[in-house]
Image (cartoon, rainbow, N blue to C red):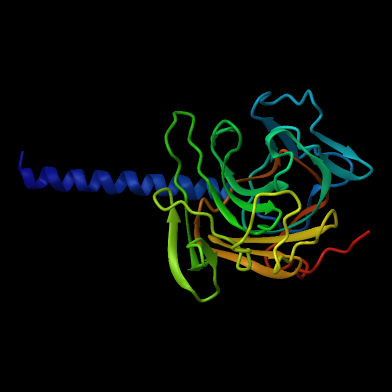
Length: 289
């Protein structure tokens, strides 16, 4: 057989495989729910739209870490894991209102209270260190609400799943990455996996309970904080109490389940909703009780 024809055929086959893979991924994304009206992920009565997954007990919750009390989603914090949405979503405006409880646990007894909203979650449960799904984290931690983290998990065969985002950034005094509107564009992926700090994260941040930076825009103590996370294709914008704190472009993955973490700190949620992009409420500060 003519070698040039063999090479041409191989090239056609390779293009065909790539096209098929892209088509399959596009089909999966299209099948994710795109809100056409408000979706109450948490309705104050149950968390039926979710299931729990814990590092130590998997799909069982014998310690009752996740409960609904007095119209609030109560996360005791006793362990590592999350509530995971049963459905996959894309192209939405997520509104989450939370406040810290007084309790912290185990190795984080005297450390900053820590949790997180994980979006675009894909792959198997526990794909990241047996705890969380492969996902993009919008950080919820004292002093760092709105940071981005790449929670890089693996598929059922142990292979790394793709993950990437582009952000406009600068570096702080200590060389840490910070979001800066109009800054230099940098790609963060499995080879350049960094935390992208929100723009005002205190360079003197310390992992001690009650830490608060001078520019923090989340509510202090155990007051309510509102996070608006707008996911529009590969674009994510994060607002904390009405202030834009972070942004990413060309995000992969760009759809998936949502998770909220339990990470050894008590947390309460009173509002968790999805809206169509451009039709959600204006980001603003959480109203206190």
